Image 1: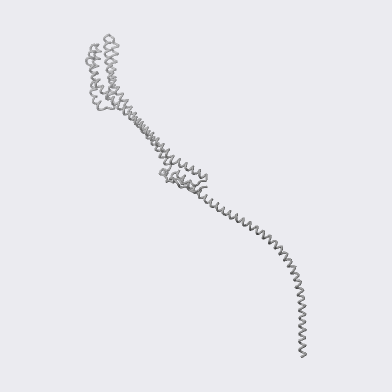
Image 2 (image 1 turned 45 degrees about the vertical axis):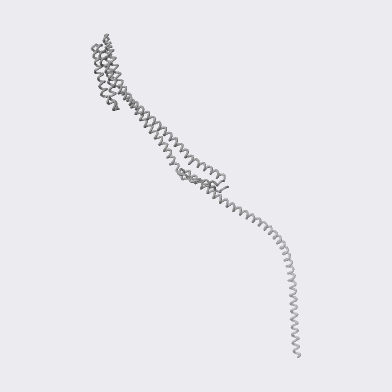
Length: 375
């Protein structure tokens, strides 16, 4: 097992590796939600603005239609009055009365259309300058042009109707139409401006949504790159480290790690590797010590075996010597017994000798005493 540590390529932890994953993911998802909220808000704003512009455009259409219809109704009333005069001329009184009623209805419709224009909510300085002239010519068209024609028709004067239409009403129509076209042009220009504004708001809305969508895509890509750099790559390196540890290789260099959850995992993995290195070193030292002890025990066993053989040989020699010693002791015992007998005999002889000496001494003493007496 290789435990020599390789420290090549060690780098310091980056600032991103110190970020906690939970706050970071909250920030990322919060940013995405904020972009969607902004997108929805912008889209809603421009949608509401578009609806307002559409309402304004609809109002402008109603105003222009009211103004245009007032002229159309007045002209239709002129023709209807002429038709009524022609019917009266040929004695078709029912048709005459119907045409007169229709002409009067057209005049009322013209007034209603003109009232719509007068009641418009948005008034520009340009069209306000035309209001007085337009009102006067509209009233003249009715009071000085159409009403006299109706009166002539009721009087049965077809020639009066034609003369009034030719001499007065036609000129009043031209005068009213001249001012009417100016007012319609003003309202048309405003409608076009509203339409252009609505188109611009729609473009801005689409651009805003496209920008928000692009920003969301960029944020997602950045999130992927960040996750690949801060989460996926360190986890892959940790898996490789674990595989190398499982294969018995404890030489992996320490990886830079921050204070995030992944950094804590890498730090604990490196602590585990260091602990394994220490444990393996201790086991290795123990194995070396055991090997040395086993070698010493083996040498001791060998020495003990040789000594045991020597002792066995010595014991055999000792046994032989003991047999010889036993025989010697037995012989010595026999010799000692014989010597004892000899000593006993010698002792008896010594006593006999002693008694003889004592007798000799006594005899010598007696001889000495006898010698003294003879002197």
